[in-house]
Amino acid sequence: MIRRTLGATGLPVTTLGLGLAALGRPAYITLGREIDLGTHRSVEAMERRCHEVLDAAYAAGVRYVDAARSYGHAERFLASWFDARGLSPDAVTVGSKWGYRYTGHWRMDPTAHEVKEHSLDALRRQLRESLDTLGERLDLYQIHSATLESGVLEDRAVLAELVALAGRGIAVGLTVSGPRQDETIARALDAGVDGVNPFRSVQATWNVLEPSAGPALAEAHGQGWGVIVKEALANGRLAGRDPDPRLEPLRRAAAAAEAPMDAVAIAAVVANPWVDVVLIGPVTVQQVRSNLRALDVTLGPGALRALGAMATPPDRYWSQRASLPWA
Image (tube, rainbow, N blue to C red; front, side, top):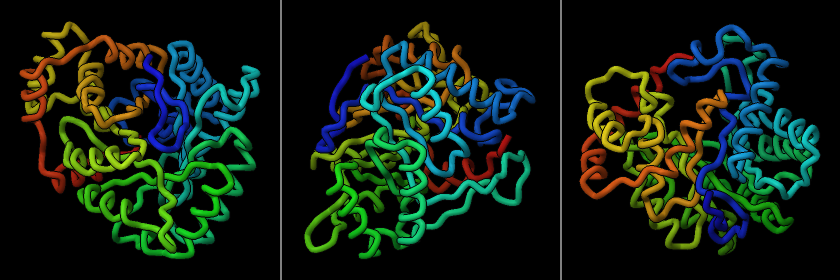
């Protein structure tokens, strides 16, 4: 596992990081979740599972973990894992996010699983909650799914608060989503208050089906920002469970590499020179091991071109993603 710093943040990270979106709450939009979890989704069962996956990732050398206020009890589970293992705050670099509230109430079918709010009040409230739970373990705090439409990148009060947070020693970043990721990243690169830009990292979706943010991420990396990639497996669509014939190039690449589809899909993300961390989102120890095989996969130019041909228009990709059921 290669260790590096996350751009100008100076935070130590590893090539692969562990995302807790699917481990902190009972429902999420990942294909095959009912197979992986079955009905064992009580708070206690999910905390045990989260600890098992964290153990496996940590033993393999993973040293970045990504949570969010909206990921149910993800921050709480992470804190209890630190405590149970007796780890020092600097054992793992921890990132979390504000801007969405978890409203699922630990149900599979709530009216809404999460609610977005990018206001100054939301930032202050959720930062207090994150610090109450994680304490000095919190290293990176990110806007959760910043978009042009939310106006958060023009909100001077929010930006000033983030500048102040960075001054307190917590690195500040943002995550982006949707078909206009590239435009949002470009806007964030120019954001700031009185000439000060609080952001030092960006997290975006990039996979072989949705690579449109690539040039913007390369630009951010060139300006010294840390780059974290999420949804490398397109919410499970690239993990071998989707029969879609359009995924045939990935199946062929996996057969040629003698590796599972998920490992090859992740390896395609790792191959980008502007990537610092690729998040994996396993919910079983077996999936951790399968994902980690990406580090042993080398994709040649021909394979990368074939996988590149799988790209779909961003509007179509995000429309399909929005239709995925919470399960």
